[in-house]
Image (cartoon, rainbow, N blue to C red; front, side, top):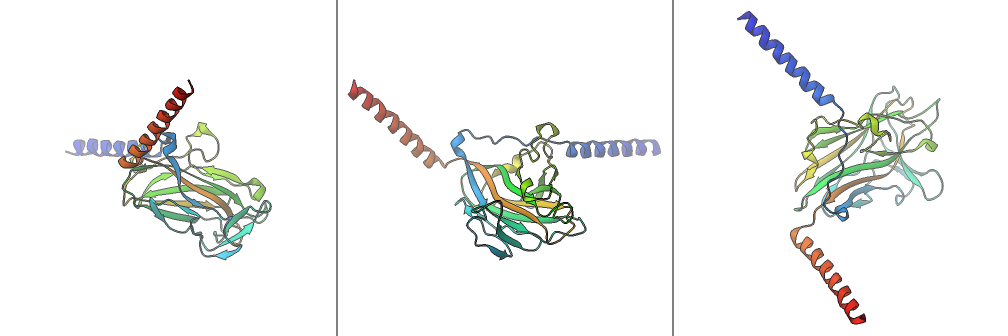
Length: 259
């Protein structure tokens, strides 16, 4: 009995180790599977350019698709909208990150409400750490995604060098611009079924940043864009097909007349 119990215990421990290893293996972010490139579109965006300069508790979306509802984007404390990098270029300066270097969060959430199916494609945003080598905001950043309340993705961590001149474009498909290192990992292994959105589904995005030594020096963020592949409803697809057919027919008639 003892021998059998030990064998079962060892097998259980071995299975647990395999499960943990599979969960931590980096999985490359997959391309969006659009049957037609025209189906890929912006579904949610946050831009600071149309916001009056000043300090706010949060920032509302600058664009929201009729397919969903979305929350404001909010940081650890507040956000100061200010010009940066020249006239006409504004950023949201999210401050309040712990000065002891621990992690703070900037986040927003969308609720998909449409009947037609969509596939979440990606997330991009411009980001820079405020300050300099002496007094600065966060120097490390990654992104968590929660689907219907469950954590399903965590990007790899990227390094932020303080100073607006060191602004980078964060792309969830390739956060650090290096395709050789896996570019993040999923807590559900290679299962990306959560990217298929139907009415009632929610996606929550958490931008996690750490390494600040000043709570007043945060990170500057702008041009937050969420994209998806949206398949038209059957009626819309039929209408698009009919328009295309009529266009081709008119061109043929025009050519026949010329001849």
